[in-house]
Length: 396
Ligand code: HEC
Ligand SMILES: [Cu+2]
Image (cartoon, rainbow, N blue to C red):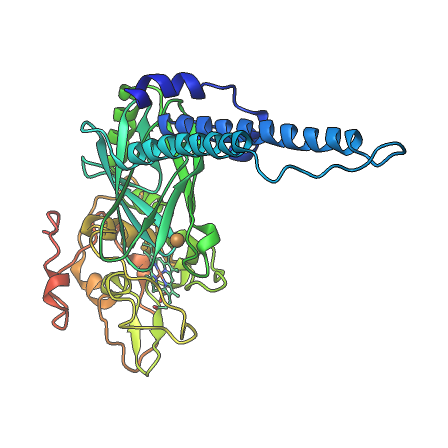
């Protein structure tokens, strides 16, 4: 009860303007605790600074050497003085410890009704997994709802830091770590990776969006979980949301340190490191995602694309990404509304012709039918079972 009643009164000191300057906006319950303790320490420091420096200046003049005065011996011992300067600082330090410890315990103990959001950190991105299965690159929550982040890393050590909530926790490969917050103000806040994790560490940031009402949050969640009907549109959203955009352009230019532009991917024949060629078809894109090291194009030696397992990109999302990448090919002819969707398997066949050993001639994607859902058939005998086991309800 000491910590619950007396201390808050004690530390409800006005925050120094400096606190806002150093820390930025405080938008969670925990942030208020941190800032109050900071203000208390700040005020204490200011008090002792003025006291000590003030007395020093006073004594400087009071005991200045001047005519008619002789220096006195200082007393060798004063019980009173020594008790005062031992007991008071001890009490103050104990107070700071209790407050700090309480704040720490609060920070490490999520309330029982916390809403769990999964976090997967990978180079160089955070992905947030919501309880209804929705995935997004931004962290969304509601004012007044405690949120617990269940964090895992796909590769190296990262750290998820939200300055406005004064909360930060390492994201460690091979285990889950946790942090929680309860936002007090709607708005958009910064979210950073705070652990140097590689080349693009400084780009590993995102937003926290705090909604005013549960209804607003639910609407957002439903929207995120309802992909657009058009797979190309969905693929374009995923291209941004899954971080492909960092390394792959859509305008034909190569991103420095990244991979080929997606304009160059579909329907082209690619030279591979170690000899051989491969045609940019559905399976090539799938393999590029699931096991990127299996086929590396010449010119990209030593630049590795991170693998995107199912936990990061679901099978249906691969379909959408393929549709999007396909639509970027210069040979792509968009569907005309009046043309009925007719499957033309012969043409599919030419494009799926993966092992283009000698002929580098381009397939004819001009006559390509619009592919609503990309076909994954058993035409690839060399495909591994996990890949071919992709469920695809739309395959005829
Ligand atoms: C960190 C950078 C990076 C990210 C992020 C990334 N890629 Fe890549 N990607 C590469 C590099 C580098 C290559 C070329 C080397 C190779 O083939 O492994 C590549 C190759 C590819 C290829 C083969 C392209 C071709 O024309 O040969 C495809 C398809 C692909 N990536 C898809 C994706 C998709 C889809 C995403 C997002 C889910 C993505 N990549 C995210 C770096 C990245
Ligand atoms: Cu990081």
